[in-house]
Image (cartoon, rainbow, N blue to C red; front, side, top):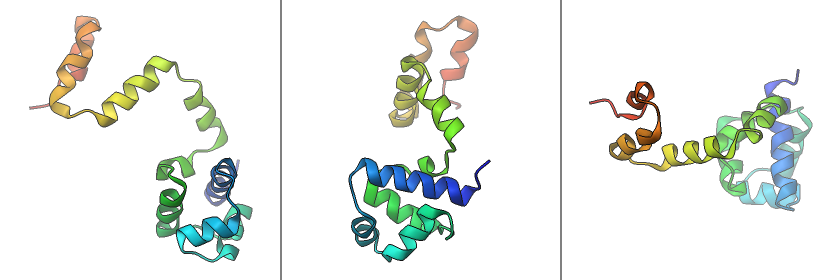
Length: 117
């Protein structure tokens, strides 16, 4: 099992390469040294919270995605489209509008979608 530092580094490299950025370009955007980015991607340098925040912003990736190991990321990718859409809606919805989300669910489940008073 990969360490957290290795997981962060592996994800950072993947996100950077998906955006076709060099380490130098990412370092400049995140305001860190290229050697720091390189060390994190290799797993030999620990990533600080502020570095993850800056790199996430530079790559336009939610911070939490840096912490997902391969198995968890695979499980998330395999979620049915409906669950992904429901998750997206729940994250962006105003809690006051949640009561209508569970309208099509069986009655014993509807209370899960009613905001607490």
